[in-house]
Image (tube, rainbow, N blue to C red; front, side, top):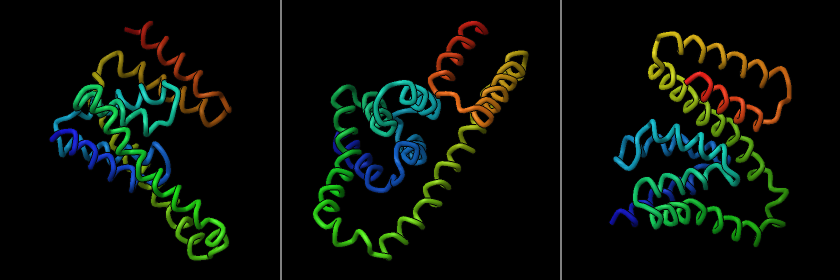
Amino acid sequence: MIYLTLFIEFFKIGLFAIGGGLATIPFLFQLTEKFSWFSVEDLTNMIAVSESTPGPLGVNMATYAGIKAAGSLGGVIATTGLVLPSLIIIILISKVLEKFKSNSLISSAFYGLRPAVAAMIFSFLCVLLEMIVYQLPMGKSFGIQLFLFICYLILVFRFKIHPIFFIFIGAIMGILLD
């Protein structure tokens, strides 16, 4: 029964998480409240692992969540559920793409979807930041982590540094400061 539930939940995520892997995060957050498959802390770990591994973020997170919920088969089922709607939609769209390519209604729909997707991602960012702040100890390490966060933020916005830099530096700083 868990496999069917995993498939259905991730199929719904794949169907409605328009905008890529980051758009799956709010849906996964809701799964933490609906099921006991994984916790919010597990979700933050999923994000870190998914961002650090090759491949699409949403697929990596679905696989990780499925494995956490129901082992290897759960990972396969969750991933299949996530990608199946996109596969079906892409096949259907490819059949009629030329007909709707210049349709103003279709263009307008995608124009309206962009801010909705951005709002979904931003809403989870707020939840994630709140969770991180409340889970951090308010001692010496909090100040160091806050300082590192500000430094990373400045580097991200001021310079165009490759994300892999932050992954390596973050890991090194975590090891050194532990």
